[in-house]
Image 1 (cartoon, rainbow, N blue to C red):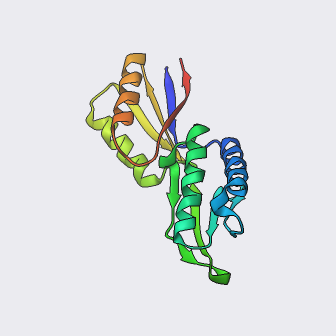
Image 2: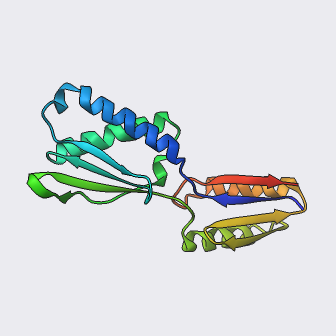
Image 3: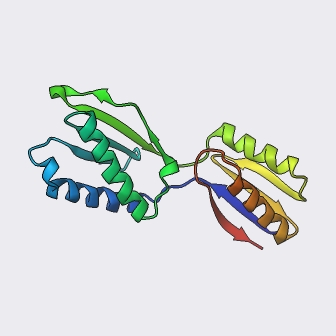
Length: 163
């Protein structure tokens, strides 16, 4: 029976490449000369920490990083940007979490919308993803279109399409 998985995943290697490109640009830009602005990347927890001299520099660092992420094909919708906070030495700090997996409430909303569409498919929640199975591929493609149109927060990926 044909099936596929609805997931939220961020390509950590592309994020790593984008961070390196952004750090290089920050080192070369004139307006960042002598600045303590930087980007710290923790691969283990999939979290970025931006540091800037003030809110203006912090916003510029975030803008540079987002530009590099977009060029590398990383969805900006999958970033959770926290509020800027004070750091040591009069600096400002901002944390960014990368989405890996779908939140439970969003999984339930996806399943609810699939059931309301009255397509001949079954949807079940498996940890942090939703598996959709059905007899016809056309029904599965209709589910993909419906999930893409619904604005539920993160950018979804559709993996493991099987017959």
